[in-house]
Image (cartoon, rainbow, N blue to C red; front, side):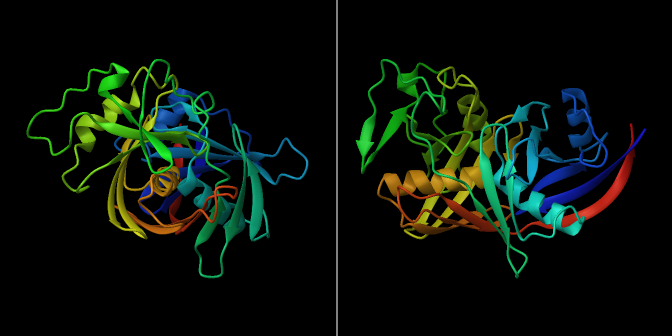
Length: 295
């Protein structure tokens, strides 16, 4: 069997996109891992599946699989690539499409300049919906939000003295359709992402694991960010991670409502006009190449 695919990227976060509209496909965890493998497959952070909508008024079903094979709830950079894909492949002539994910409905808008704006919906702070187990814990409040100590969570997070991060490690916790823990650091270039990212990801207080963001505040309208993604490791950019970092920064009093996020793969613009409105994320989405793979 030969499988057609399109390789795409958004700010360096790369994807294999598959059309399951015209050719229905059962994407198993093993197949997702093979396609994402950078030596024995195509190579990608995540696999995106375009499927028919199952809901009236929704244009497509948008499914996301990490490189480790499991299906996940959301990917903002992938959403931007999704709308460019369906537009370029003649699956829709709309510049605004609505898609359903595992747990949400997103509105994606393709701009005249080629950039895509995604309505990421409102952030979720309810611990049961993130999910985050805060039982027995006492947070430190800053601004209008909470910071949770990892040492207080009972995790085996041992930070060597040479690692440039304060102990205890404190994170802000929220969901942008998927769970995020945001940590402020002085310099993302020297932040212990490889050390702490995997440990935060699998911490027992996060039943479904968590994405770990390391944010450097440059100014009230500018941050630098690195994200260790759940099931994928560190990526060059993470759209939901950028949104989570900005939302956390706003709630903690560090940031304005419109922020440029510098990821290693490119820049994203994140806007949260008010607490009662959706978070908007704007950034690039490009096709890299197309091909077929023998399965």
